[in-house]
Length: 91
Image (tube, rainbow, N blue to C red; front, side):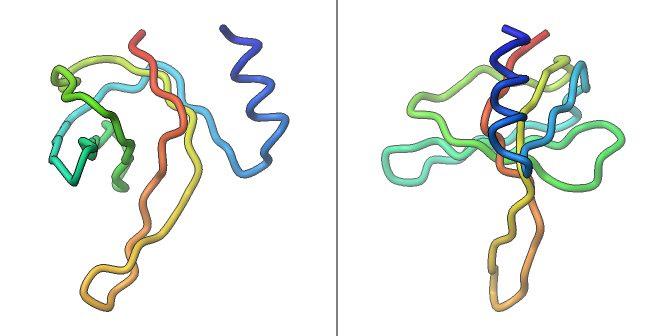
């Protein structure tokens, strides 16, 4: 499993990895056929987002490993930074 992460990180220089970080907040909302998941991590002030086809159990208090890259979105004419999650695993 570790080699998969190393391959991803080597292939794309923008990807970052966080290991064993605790989830402080987890929100899921439905958008079309997808569930948009937004999580906040302890010690980080930016949100991490990912999509799933099915609703997922709450990750609040769980320790996770994340592979992500920075991104921005426009909301009401203002630009917000967030982290787009490519891979998330519970530890």
